[in-house]
Image 1 (tube, rainbow, N blue to C red):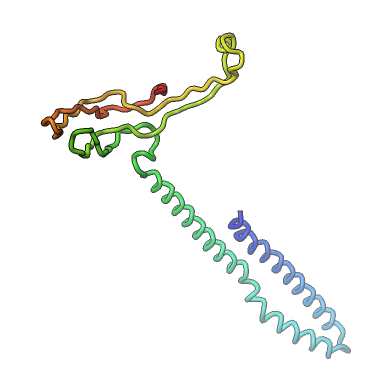
Image 2 (cartoon, rainbow, N blue to C red; image 1 turned 90 degrees about the horizontal axis):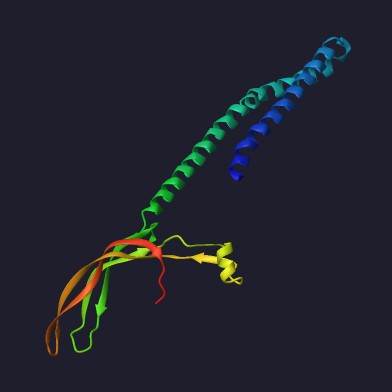
Amino acid sequence: MVMITVLIWPSSLSSASIASHRALKKQYQNRLVRASKNPSNNSIMNNRSATWLQYSSLWPTIRHYPHHYHQHGHQYCFWFGLMMILLVVLMADSGSSSVWEQKGCHIVGHTQRIDIPGCINFELTSNACRGYCLSYAIPSNQETLLVNDQQMITSVGNCCAMTETEVMSVRVMCRNGPKDIKFKSASKCGCFHCKKY
């Protein structure tokens, strides 16, 4: 809104100043005509002529004011457009964020330290699910209110979790010898009703 005000203000100011200068020009022309018709008032005519010459010398500069403001208006529009383009580019850049910041539920690599009693600690890298899903709350329907008249709101929560898994087998050195331990790794992720554990 501030930028629009800056663009409009010079043109309105130039129109008002040009109108006032035109009125002043017309006034001096009328006075010169009246003075020329009265020969006994030559001194006044000479003074008016001198003033008119001084005013006329300034008129070409005044006449070019609208063009001056027109050029600056184009410059303001150019810089405003450039700033808007940069803003759009920055917003598009922000969309290419990390996987867990993107919309939906996605597979991501996850490394965790495994500590099994009696075995050597180790790090395991597997697939996990990360993201968010749609959850909402709605007014309870008649069937729900018949069962529980205190439950005015029904909430539905969806969680991002593994829908399909694959088994990873890892051989771990333990006190009683090596052991093959199986871990689950996500092969597909999705949204479904959250479970209570």
